[in-house]
Length: 95
Image 1 (tube, rainbow, N blue to C red):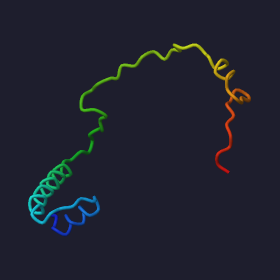
Image 2 (image 1 turned 45 degrees about the vertical axis):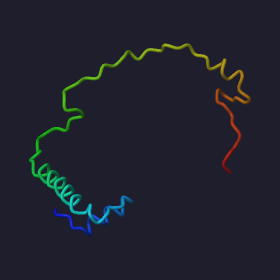
Image 3 (image 1 turned 135 degrees about the horizontal axis):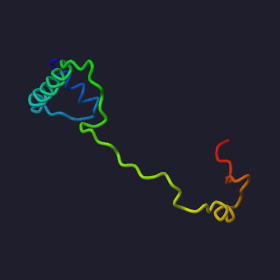
Image 4 (image 1 turned 90 degrees about the horizontal axis):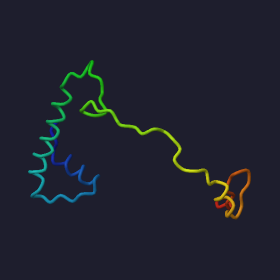
């Protein structure tokens, strides 16, 4: 897909980028190169290829899911202005 100068100006307007007249030629060449690379990538047959989350087959090291802190809920709620059934009560903000 080849870009025209009108396409480039429209993209620049949508991206809120100002392009000077002397910049349009080089930008059209660069954008054309990028679109050419995209066309090459889309031409590759990827049927049967499983998607990867990473280019390398890495496994994430996970830590044990163990409790490391003591339960201090009662202490925190003891100093709260209003508590009911283990929940903090706050003033209504939205009507």
